[in-house]
Length: 493
Ligand code: FRU
Image (cartoon, rainbow, N blue to C red; front, top):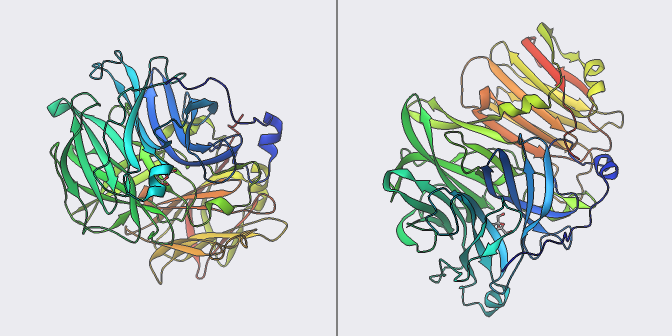
């Protein structure tokens, strides 16, 4: 079935969009209506494609379509017509997209193939538990038009209520496709020679990691550490995150094409903030693993105080590995492409903060979208107070007592739309020595990369006006070795 070319979303004009309260200026948001998980992120012929869970009929979750956006640099996104529409098999839940370089599926060399979950409401209502199964669709014009495979589903439901979110990658050593699928309280791996016939290989995680909620949106990919190849498995869970609601955990280990074995099956989190969920990596980016998540939380996503649209994505983040004792841990940092939207930075050195140091006069001009990079001498309490003339206050910092980073949005503007939204979220430190922090603010979000990306916190908030005043606070005299700040250009259209 060919998806209609008509655009269902009512597009608001560019001027209005950029000026809407809380509208991010350099994070992807749909121009109108609801968005959740990023889907099918893939790099093809010089263009980055982002598909996303989309309800073009409203600003809350509903019948899922795959929305579509493209970019040349992962910073400037252009929304495209909807890619995948619901059909007789169901609505279109999360999944992935691959470039079929060897034409294994027979849809054409370099065809773009989407692998997604069909969610069938009528079967769900019948409570047989067979309502989720996997389908595929292909595009030979770089994602503009799509054809659903006529023999869908390619992976029927074996009787598992939650059976979804296929993430597929090419496993070169055995020249086959590997699918990582969320199956209730575990991950199931399947393999296929042609994206159409799938064989179960193994299961992982029934009794490992965090299980406060259902497992969703897995992703498996290799990362190199000084010539050593490790495999990383991301698993989103909802609820049960470290600061409440939905969040994404990960395991580092070994994968042999069939089975994943973690080195150390402790629970670790990609991001400790409340607002980074269902994130996965781009396909077809060579050795780079670039991740984007949905910058919200199922606890309140449908009630956040935005108007014509709901939800943004996180910034694209480069994933890497670092060592913590004998273990490998995941690091996340904003991709280098971000330089295309960061204005010239100013650098301050060797600032002594006795109790408070005000850099508001420098930050004001950035109008609520800026980056601050700082390095502190030693390991002492530090708090960045981000405020505005209305008195909204967001605090980002580190507390020695609990050896933890935090974001406190208790007083950061509108919080009453959801009990529990007003909160201080924390993340244990996983490093020693001088602390460094990179903080990226965009209208209604803060992304905090501590210790060069070893600890990450992402939070959304809804101030009455941009947080354009900044004070650095200390509880004991503190030396900031270096403080770099820069404004960020508007990248949305
Ligand atoms: C995660 C999720 C997925 C599902 C999709 C539905 O946020 O629940 O498991 O495929 O959203 O929109």
